[in-house]
Length: 227
Ligand code: FE
Image (cartoon, protein in one colour):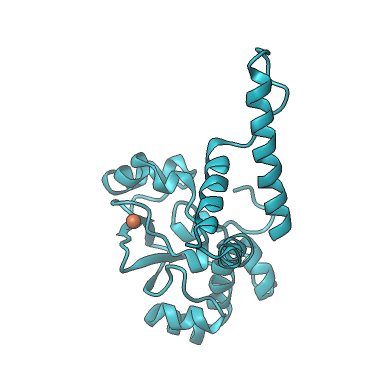
C-alpha cells in the first residue's frame, strides 16, 4: 500500500509539474493530473516530514487504517450479530462501545456510541446538525451528503421528506426519531432484519446491511429485492 501511494503521489507531482511547463505553449491538456487536494497533501506531507514534525510510518499507518480497517462492513457485522444473537443485541443496546469492541472495533471516533433500534413503528435517523460527527469505527468516514448543509438542516426539519428522497417510504403511523450526533456521542441505527432471511447465516446477513441503513436513511432490503 505504502509504495503504491508514494508512487502515485510522486508521479502525480511530476506529472503536474510537466503539465504546467507544457501548458505554457499549448492550450490543450494532454493528461488528467491529480486533483489539487492530492497535490497539496503531497506538498504538505513532504514539508512536515522534512521538518521532522511527522513520521512517515505513522502517516502510513493512519492511511492504512482508513483504507483497509474501518468502514461500513464493520458496522454490518455488528448488525448481523445482533440479529442472530439476542443476548449480544441486548449488550449492544445497553453498552454499544463494549459490545462493538467484542468484535474488535474500537477507537477512531467510536469511544461513545449509542445504538438505536428500528422497529415496525419506529424509524431512527442519524444526523450531525453541527458538522459531521459519525461513528468512524463502525461506519468509516461519512459520505459527502452526510456533511452537506442540506442534509444537516433538512433531516431535522422534514425527516420524512429526506427519507423519501432516499427512497424510504414510511407509513404515517411510524414514528421518526432524529438523533443529533455530537463529538461526545455518535449514533448507529440497528435496522430491522428483513423478512425471509431465516435461512441466512450471519455472514450472509451482514452482506445485506448497508451504510445508509445504519445511518437510517434506508432500510435493509431482503436478498434479491431491489433497493
Ligand atoms: Fe459533527
